[in-house]
Amino acid sequence: MNNRTRPNDLLLLAGKVIAVFMQAAMAFGAAALLISSVALLIFRDDVIAEFANEAGNPEVAFPLLQLAGVMLIGLAIVVMLFVFFGTLRKIINTVGEGDPFAPANADRLSLMGWLMLGVQLALIPALGLGLMLAKYADETENANITVDAGLDLTGILLVIILFILARVFRHGAAMRDDLEGTV
Image (cartoon, one colour):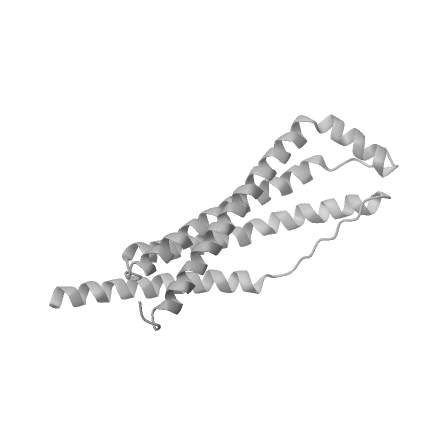
């Protein structure tokens, strides 16, 4: 292996390691959200009683459904990100094999674009539910919740870039096929 290809191999290795790590983190997050969502719904009466006791104001209704909603939306987002990083690993593997302009990579990039668009859209209802939870926190004495809201231009830019790259890869695969057909 010469020095010109070695940095690329290290880059691909780093990409694989990060993608595997992120998939593991997403799997852990999905398991935690799933278990806690189910536990929240199963033990809802106990949870409501405990929060009423801690809040010091039993008249304030605990927003159980809003909290469960945020957790389930979070679960959906984590699952989409798990699939995103798995798809990224497949692309990295084809690049390492020397065939980045495989037609499957164009489809993979499109899928990644749709997944990230889904994440961006899922953040909208999560924000609304988060604001409801923040309102509840304001009504209690011991709770403090902040919600950061705003347009995520980085996420929107990533979606656009992924769809453009999918077109580039489709075009590159078609050009390669045309070139192989003329030889």
